[in-house]
Image 1 (tube, protein in one colour):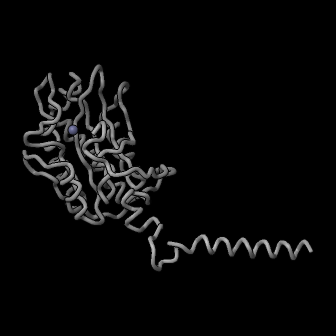
Image 2 (tube, rainbow, N blue to C red):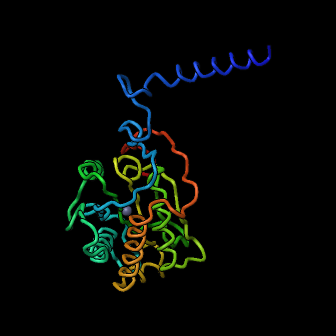
Image 3 (cartoon, protein in one colour):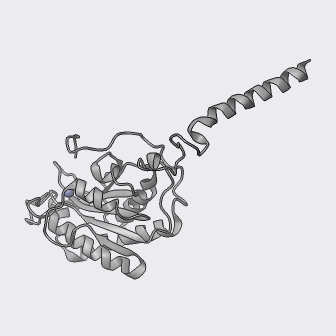
Length: 252
Ligand SMILES: [Zn+2]
């Protein structure tokens, strides 16, 4: 009696599971919900990239948008970012196809940057910035939002921490939804390479040798990500299904 009941239960359960999996999961008509479909992957809910051949380097700001300006050295963020990107391109050598979002002092709208990034499949996007903030803020930080961008962000931040050993103020890895960490269809991170507002750090940033070290560190992290993917990075953070970031969002 008991055995017959159990058999019936397992059979009923299997029927329920089949009926639950059927809508959308069978590959026929209807929206697909698997991680590889465009609807999901646009949120970056998938493993981190491995074996990618194209690296899109985005120098922050440009043209009329100077970004931060150091009160100590008068250096502009847009110039430091472009210089660092050029060094990063050389550091990556012939190992990747490198695409520059801008290669001179001109303005590119953030949404245009996203659109251009989306024209490159099997690529990653690394946006390079320098920071500004109050008080004694200093150190590097790396922003990511999507699950597929976590390992890359973590590798870059770890690599940068070796160049900028910041006992105080190093903000590390930060999960933040901004246009260049949420909206592209490819894995994407934004790196803040140090504080132009900090007197000591801004003098470091003004030194080309220091910017070379930053570029070298980021390049090493990109190469490691391409070779190893998520290996050694521990559990990936769960996806957060938030809408596209818009210009009206706070902390853009
Ligand atoms: Zn910036």
